[in-house]
Length: 290
Image (tube, rainbow, N blue to C red; front, top):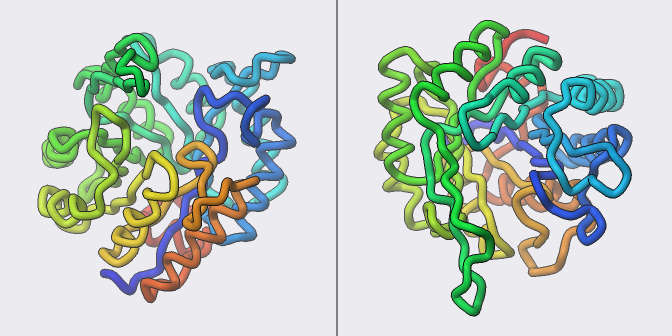
C-alpha cells in the first residue's frame, strides 16, 4: 500500500479568500494558468471552487453554471488530461446551485460533505472570528447529492471534519449510498474539527473500510506538512493548494499552486512513492474513462 503511486490533488482557490490580499486565482484564465502550474509540478487532479466574476467581488463564491463551465472549459483547454473535482459545499437545504454546476460540467469527482459540524474559530481575544455557523449536512442532503453524482458518473469524495463522520462514511458505503470502498478526505485543522496531528492518522485508518481511498486536507501553516508526510508514508493520496495553506514546509509563503505541488511531490518521493499521472490516477481511483 505505502509504495503505490501517489495521486496528488491541487486545491486551486478555495471559498472566501480575498484575491486582493492573497494570490488566489479567480478568472477562467487565472484558474487555467494555475492548473497548468499544478499539472507541471505533479498534480493529476484539481479541486475547483467558483468565484464571482463581477469586478471587485472575486472573494465571493458563485454557483452560476455558466461561470462553472467557463472556468472548467478553460482548465480543460489548457491541461486536457487533468481530472476535475468540484466543490459542492453549501449551508442549508438548497443544493440547486452545486447541482446545476455538476450537471453542466460533469467532473470526474466531486466533494461530498459527509456530516455536519459547528464551524467555529476564536480570535486571540477569544472573540468569535465569525458568528458560530452550523455547516449542516444531514443524511437526506448527502443522499440528494449522491443521487445526482451517480446519475452523471461522478465519484463522490467524502469530506470528513470529525471522527464520527469518518465512521459514518463506512455506514454510507455499507448501505450503498457511496462506493465501497469509498473515497475519503480527512479535513484536519479546522478549530472545531479534527486537529492537524499526524498521530491521529493511524487511529483514523482503523475506522475505514478495507481499500478506502484516503487523503488529508491539512488546514493551517507549515505544521500541516507533518500530516502530509505521515499520509504519504501510510499509503494515502495527497492534496495541497492555496485553498488549504499559503505556507511551504520551510515556513515561507507560497506565491502559486505550482510551488506547493512541487513541495508535495517531494514529500511523496521522500516516502518512496512515485507520482501518478492523470491516466494512472483514473485507474487507481476507479474513475470513468476519459
